[in-house]
Image (cartoon, rainbow, N blue to C red; front, side):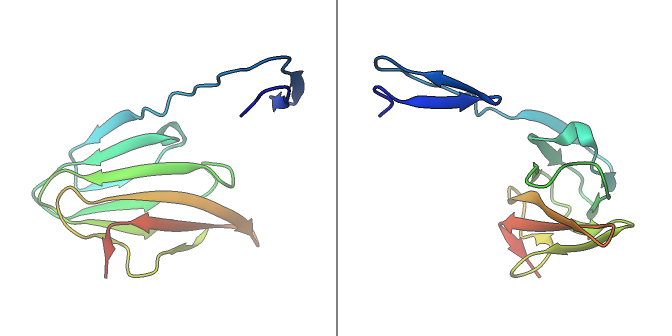
Length: 130
């Protein structure tokens, strides 16, 4: 409830004298890839990278492409299993189970957690397997 409240937008405080409705678009732009390798790009920020190939696919997470807290979503649309790999100067891509999308139509979100000792640390959450 935002009645008689204030919010901050881009560093500017806005007072609400009545009732306000705030909406945001949560749709993702798709980036369709059909090769057996793909290196994530800064332009993939908040996108859904769809990976479609009959053979295995390796997605590499490079260093210094995004800020801490930024996210990239990936989706395996083909039969080829997707493996997430850390690129140079990425000290780790962490996941509880493993770094492979489990099966066709599995997805995961990659989140940059921190940059430490000049190396990025990412976490992968989603439908993953070892």
